[in-house]
Length: 398
Image 1 (tube, rainbow, N blue to C red):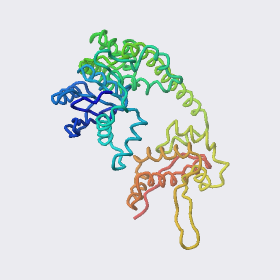
Image 2 (cartoon, helix red, strand yellow; image 1 turned 45 degrees about the horizontal axis):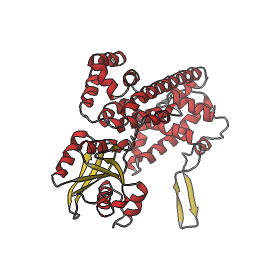
Image 3 (cartoon, rainbow, N blue to C red; image 1 turned 90 degrees about the vertical axis):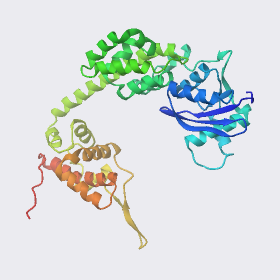
């Protein structure tokens, strides 16, 4: 690429915000701040840098999360370059320091564009436009997930690349039935805008009576925050409904499986015994029954704790090495179930008192929960062995 630019703007792209560094041709730093992934803020920064002369915008990722800065820079009639990741990492070794920060990366990108323009790849040209859209129509088939569980992440990633403002509204509640129905019936930003406020509100209120009207208002407000059209938006309009339908099917299957597990658990003779203990619900009880059964295979509660990996391992060698450390072995699924049940039982006064006691002994949160899970393991073993419901301990006499 050419090296006759007045300002070199290096952008280390990110999902929520980028970091931009602007350098003059002489190497003077004129801009070094975090930059929200918003069209208005991007335009303001590019216009500010343009006051010094022609601007070259360089990014380390031109697609997905870096698509909006590239599109906005092109709309402002600035050339855009791309510094490949491998070249970026090799060049970073030439700069002092070993820290890995967004500010340092943005500075390296800008300085590399200023001093070594041959390492850059041109993304956009002012006259010819894009060489290849990051989401061309030929990518629509490969965008579809091979497995349904990946639909959630793919929807959020696709929205981030074409319309970050819309992703900020829909992303946190992407699995909500109202959001999935909007994406399934309307598609992407263009389809939602074409549907209009009335239809959008009707779809949202049907699946979310309390928040439907507010959701529709937030969606339309987010659409107004971006005026540029990122390359690949048209293909996304076709892909998003398919991904939404796939995620809806996955969530429906999970709901059906959960109902089957709950129904099978109700028929087990030990179901009432396990669920009577604070912090143990349907899923945790099912996991314990799958991994442990009735507990008859374990001679004692200590054996059960060791099998679950919540019993500390003693280290002792002569008189110099002594101590205990958390176990790295054991049944990971059972350990997770006991750990989560201990966390859920913190509302129980008895469990909370034991947890607070361990925190007072300067143990960290996870270590205190492991101690609580070990304590509850003794109670759980006795409940399974005697087939008795959980009984809260009586308060000790003064």
